[in-house]
Every structure is written in C-alpha cells, then in structure tokens.
Image 1 (cartoon, rainbow, N blue to C red):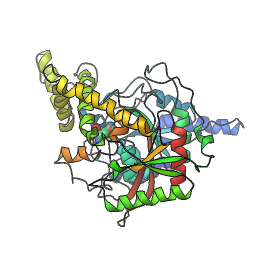
Image 2 (image 1 turned 60 degrees about the vertical axis):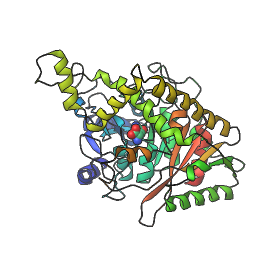
Image 3 (image 1 turned 45 degrees about the horizontal axis):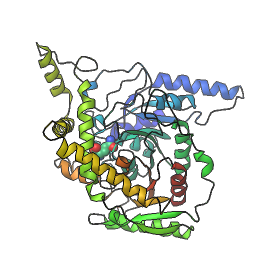
Image 4 (image 1 turned 90 degrees about the vertical axis):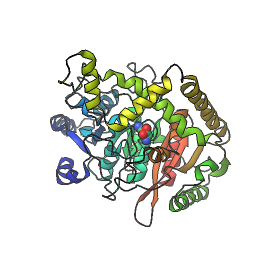
Length: 447
Ligand code: GLN
C-alpha cells in the first residue's frame, strides 16, 4: 500500500532515492507469519519506515545525496537500521537529503530537490527533507533523519510532522556517513508524539560500535507520556523572540505557551545570553569537522572515480571536483581554513570556547526550568529557489536550531498550528541532557 502511494505521487515529491522492495517484502512476510502463529509482535511490527540516505542499509545504495557516492552500496547496516528492523519495522528504502546533510532546504541534493507535500512550490526544509516529506505525504509512518544543526527539527516544522533530536550519545551513530561527528545525531520523524516516543524507545541505547554512545539506562518514553504536565516549569528565552521572527509564528508559539499554562505548567522567562553567537560558532565547528570527515572521499575507496587523470593526485582532485557540489566544496574550504595553522586559534579554538559558553547558558537555565520552549524556525517553509543564491541567508535561518546542537541537549519540533496561507508551524521544546522523558511529555501536551 505504501509502495503504491510512492509510485503514484513520489514522482512529484522526490522523497525516495531508492526502494528496498525485496527486503521490505521479506520482512513483511516474516511479521505476517509471526502473527499467523499467534506470536507476540514487537513494538514496530509491520510499520513502514524510510531511511535517510546518509545511513547505511545493506543491499541499498547510500549516496548521502552526493554524486561522489554514486554506486556505493554499504555491506552493512547502521545500528539504528538494525534496531528498527529487529523491532519489526518494514524498511521501504532510502530518502533524499541535502548533500552530506549540508543544507536547510534539500536543494543541495545531487538528485534534485524534494518538494514540501503541504505546499508543492515550497521546500520541505533540510537536510532531512526527504525524511520529513515522506512522513508528511503518508509514504511512510515514520522515518529516520539526522540532525547536526537542525536537520530533523527544521524540516519537521516545515512539513507539519514531529521530529526528535535525541541527546548526543543517546542513539548510536554507527553506520552514519559523518558530517560533523561532535554534532551528528540520528532521530525519528513521525506523525505524532506517541509514535515518536515508540520509535525513540527502539533506537536509544548503548552501542559498542559507537564509543560516543551512552551507557545510561534508557527511560520508558512511552510510559512517561501518561504523566500529566502540571507543575512542570517551562522556560521561555527572550533571545528566541527577537527581530526576524515571523509574526504568525510568534503568535502561534505564544498561544502554545498559553496552552501549557492552562495545563498547569509554570511559565518563566529564562535567558540564553550567547544565542547570537550560535550560528557563527556552529558554522566554524561544523565545517572544520566536515573538512576532516570528507577527506576520505578520494576516488579510491568509495563510489565515483575520475577516469580522466593519469596521476594519483590528479585523480584525487578530479574526483573531488566532479563529485562534490558547490555547498560541500564551500564548507570544505571554510573548514580547512578554520583549522589551518595560522587561523586555528582565532577561529576553531575560539568557536570551541563559545560552544562551552552556549552549553553553560543551557545548564544555568535548566537549574530553573524543566524544559525550554520557543519557535523552531524564524519563517515558515520558503519557496523553492528563494534562498539558493544566498548561503548566508540560508545559514542565518538556523538561528533557533544550532544552539541545542552545540550544547548536546535534546529537542523536538511539534506542529502547533499553521499560517493563514496554510503552512505548518513548529514549536521547539528543548530538554536537559538525557531528559527526553520530560521533553516528550510537554510535546504531547502541546500536540
Ligand atoms: N542547516 C544546517 C547546515 O546546513 C544543519 C544541517 C544538519 O543539521 N545536518 O549545516
């Protein structure tokens, strides 16, 4: 049924890059047989799920939205993929995204942009645009995305679905094609908060294949949703309501906060004074890490290899020149510059120091409140092509997402209304490190 929907309309949306029919059918048959035998079914039995193309899925191509990985089929599964399938999910295929997860509109994919199913002349957000669009369009019940500086939460807001950024270390990154390793996280897109808690329950936990995954016990996310939110302290950061925030979004967020008050939450102002440095700090650290992570794409080990070269170094150059798109090249240059001997102290080291200040802002605020609530994006989904000529403008729109990424805390975007023109609006709820439980309880209350 889901493949039929994809065949009927994904030609326009462009969310799937590859379908994994055989694997999906084998899994569906296995679940059917279990049901026929009357066996207890696992949490995600038969649930159709799509996977962002930066995650490895054995037998399916993994392009990361890039030409340089064309033809690369990883011989193994990412841990998040293994866990979904072990929980009964039916893996439909691989989802379009910005090249190497760099972007906010899905227009940086080498395989064409994704369209927002809620408004086909608009972007779905990025970089996990395909993952958000596939759930919004009903092609999948859930999907996996990755979020380095907003790439789950922002497209969730643009497409009117739920997107969870788990705490750094909560979900294994094994099998994820790295963009910025100290920031990259894997998390789910779903249509509602209860489904998000159910999928996160499956994904979370220690993985010996990812040394940065945490061995803290996993909480009962689904069970916790039953607890009411009255008495919870909700922080509202003034810095998230400044200039540039669309008035319709501001009004929707204020209404949501009023709703939490009515549900018995205690609403308090909090301050995150370094917020204005979050975007520049993020773009120094993320590009620095990307320049290092992307050095492995040299034409030798994976995917594309230029046949035009007659020396090894020319082969490296020509492969990287033909394989990487403009945004990826821009970031490799920026990151290499920030890490170079003469500039390291001025840029990379300084950015790491500001990252600490941004983290301390959150730790101080979380001494007074249980969650922090604010807008997810300064504007609703913009028109395709509207910002492609201005990378700075695109970067500045990440203002509300990148601070949580740098601090390692958890966050979720939940639909909280729409504009007069019918475009979805997302509210962001940020939680303490490893306190997904409280964050999801508040998310359910605003849904
Ligand atoms: N928009 C941000 C960027 O372009 C975030 C991307 C992401 O989270 N992967 O880097």
